[in-house]
Amino acid sequence: MKHRIRVSAVTLALLAGVSQAQALELDGISVSRDIPCKGEDVSITGNGNQFRLSGECGQVEVHGSEQVIVLVDAKGVEITGIANQVQAERIDQLDVSGGGHRVEASLRGEPERAAPVAVYGADNILTLGFDGPANVDISGSGHQLEWHGDEPQITTSGSDHQIERR
Picture (cartoon, helix red, strand yellow):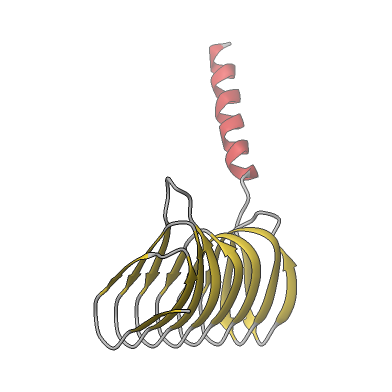
């Protein structure tokens, strides 16, 4: 009898793992789509795609080149590759690496947790609004940051950065 109880507990644990949501994976070349997030994480790869993500998203990852992504709300956005464009109305954190990206976003921080922003690589252009505390770390070369809203804590390393309050 004890053996059957253990098997049932293991089976339930496995079923619980299977029922967890997988990331929504979007891939292609020159694809254009509107996609509801429904709270899911989203992984975008490829070249030259245009995706509009509606609703609340989990973590959004943008990899590849020349992607154009518009989203309303996400827990976080990670951008890698070359020359991607991302516009986000509300996000909790931002991580940008690679080069030539253009990012417009509003970040929300909480008194107990500043919104983290990390920018690495070269020649990324960011226009950011801050609602609440934020920590911005800029490394590499030639990044441009134009910001408005609450003043973030900004640290820099590297060279040729332009940082301006709007």
